[in-house]
Length: 624
Figure 1 (cartoon, helix red, strand yellow):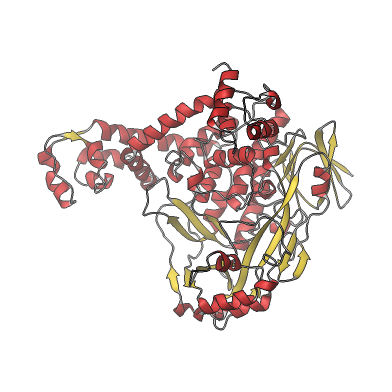
Figure 2 (figure 1 turned 120 degrees about the horizontal axis):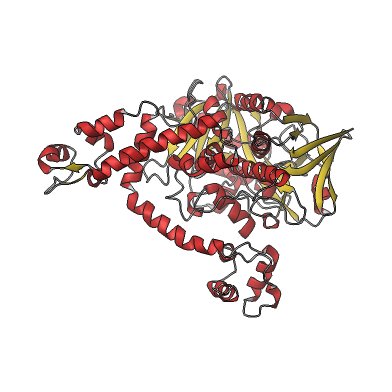
């Protein structure tokens, strides 16, 4: 039996769902193929969205017209803004979600998008004709023909799970691996390797002594993930809990190290440096007497708890014995052990910035198959792959995001330019323009671009237009409104800031750290009138105005630097040089430039091993 589509998406995780939804919403006839329709957008590890830098990506996906933010708001059981003690470039939203409700919210969305079908099956092989993907075949013996294929298979490609010396094939606990697909792709010259990640033990909350832990409550202000008018926090809000390991815990864990797959040679693949297992922590940080753990609920009405910080693949008896040395878990009962999983990934330097493979036309990769880790990184790649697959089907220029436009742009550029030597996780430190890539302005940066594609809805675009108009009006007022010392000095003294000696503009006062926009509105009638014109989303707009005013100088300086460096992004060099013959380049630069064949001078400059001198050589050869 044969079926025909414009686009096939293999895998219904966070990358696959966003890819399929974007392609279908743009008008492509799309089929999402998944092993299990009841596990769509399953959160394999912690049921949480966001976190440092990851929260920005989730908001960018939403601003582009994706669904991660909407589903998170509908299923959140705790919400917080991280890094509040730092500047707004570092603020990041994070939500703990109800794992099962998250799946069903996503499924309801997917099932009701026009042009989008779901097929439950496992893809066995891609069909390639004359260097171009033309379809796939499945284990049920079905052939799907399509113009584009997007592979978002996550950790399922030849997945192998480890608990102590026990090994079990699978892509997730109790779910089978995807076999043969890696080999089907690799025979066309695409290179792959193995990576490893892990997940902690799941605990029965009835066995926990919460009185021996510290509660970590959520927040209940106006912040949420989606910029759309959706009511946040509709589920019961629950606390998380914190505690620490101790020397007795570490002693028990050390006893199990000879049977640890990470240390006895059983696991050979690359693991995440930034989210290490508990056994890796006690070895790497042997001087540390304790490590913090976070006990987090898996849902609104379940006793299942996730022990963040205790990822492990040690034998089950060791995991439980170690936990029982923590006072809060002295009577612990577990649902299942932590485990490690190895899986195949493809070297992302084999991709274009559109996420299309360089060797097989119209074949796209997104998510953990590109060596990343995290739901948000997967979703960001997924929506971009879905958009570009649609463009490949129907014509148009590839849709890409620059490093000064989005964390998604940083993510994809890092992957295709630098590759990965460990599971890639986004951090604010990876973005050189993070003051421009704040969580509060993702819609201002990206929704217009999504609208021009035809992806953002009329409702989303109208909300952006209204928000922008209110912000511009209040910002202009603050920049032009003059204040006399006699009128405001008593207020300034009350706020603990230096009185004025002469008149100034309102913006100069708001720039002071002790002064807020609402402080001034309480005493300046004209400003209050301007703010009162905002009848909806007032808190969001006031926050945006205040950030723009207080950080105006920093934002302008970073914008100037970005614009200066971006000039190198317009010097195209792809396919122009035979790098192996340019002897004035270093040997490492010749090898890496030949392998990656960068699009621009700027991209060449970000390749590890390509020096400033090598860039100067390319500039001269380009006639610059």
